[in-house]
Amino acid sequence: MPANQEPAPHSDPASGEASRTDRTVAGLRARLRHAVKARVWRFRLFGLLAVQAGVAASLAWFVGAQFLDNPSPVLAPTTAVGIVAASMGTRLRRTVELLVGVVLGLAVGDALMSMFGIGPWQTGLVVVLAIIVAVLLKGGGSLLAQAGGTAVLIATLEPPVRELSVPRFVDSAVGGLIGLAVGLLLVPIHPQRTVQRLAEPVLDPTIAALHNLAAALRRRDLGGAEQSLTGLRILGSRMTALDEGLGAAQEVVRLAPLRWHQRKILAHYTRAIHHLERSLYGCRAVARRLTKALRDDEPIPDEFAAAIDLLATSVQTLRRVTTPERADPQDARRQIITAVELVGKAQGKPARDPTRPHTHRLGYSGMIAAGEFHTAAHDLLMASAMGTDEAGELVRQTLDRAGRD
Image (cartoon, rainbow, N blue to C red):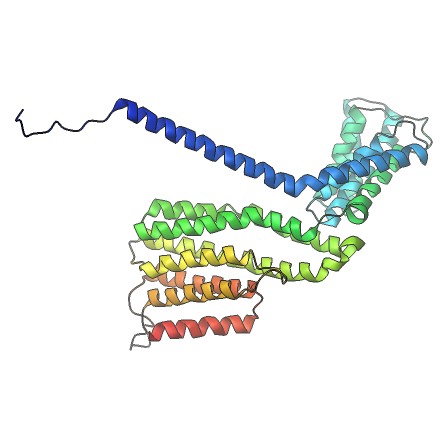
């Protein structure tokens, strides 16, 4: 080897092993942080459930023992706890259906098992008759399932007790009513906080997916764009849970005296959440069309990626200002309008030919994505408490200004 030639660099096995160890440790820490965050979120969302269930079980046991002359009132607290758990984040009608199903299954089971005894055909008969009665009562799926399931438990686990002065279905009905009373009157949920916590698993992944989509567009990374689109698509079930939580919160402020003072605030918050949800569906449509644009090798100007980043930032800003007492929504509105202006620049200036509204800075899918983006921005402006006409006019003026620049 010549004297002036340095040996070729080589990788150090020890440093490579250390690097792999560091990555493994970092991955474990990230998973641990995610697990802790998830547990904290669940405790914040369902922590009140433990208090409600404990109060309902205690009251149901006391009423069953003292007023229903039941020395071992098992069904009353059991039903009370079940109703409290079922009512968390669900509509009142569904909770009532569950209660009726439990009582109906108990009544049919006790009536038939006392005549025919316990056995396989008796169990089948009890289930059939319980569900038939539920159907005749025009019950929904919750009532049918609960009636049949309770009938099975009564028919197979515990025979009827004839010496009770009060039938067991009355015991269960009283416990269920106590559970409803605790959830609505004594220890009602905080409607706004519950909805906020249900919105977190919708908004956080949406913001992250939009930022990832913008980064993928800058790299023209089709795989990254498809991954972002998948992340937006899987949020459908969480949006459904959020809608259910909104309905339950509205029933709480309507029926629970302790929450009546929150009606106005919750109405404002509900309106904002509904418009946010609509904008998220629009963002999913934008991601779908831009992914198609990448797949077809269409041009996507940098302004479009910057607009998507800014729209994600505006969603993050809006989540902090969706209640009247918190902050002025002007920052979020400015971010949204700037994003609309960037998309207008991405579309290009108006062409002289009226049949060609814009120059070819965007392709077919890109132009559709721009339209979807305008709709999503319009919904976000409405989420900031702006009126429909005002938001629409502001978007149109912004696009006209972007076309002239």
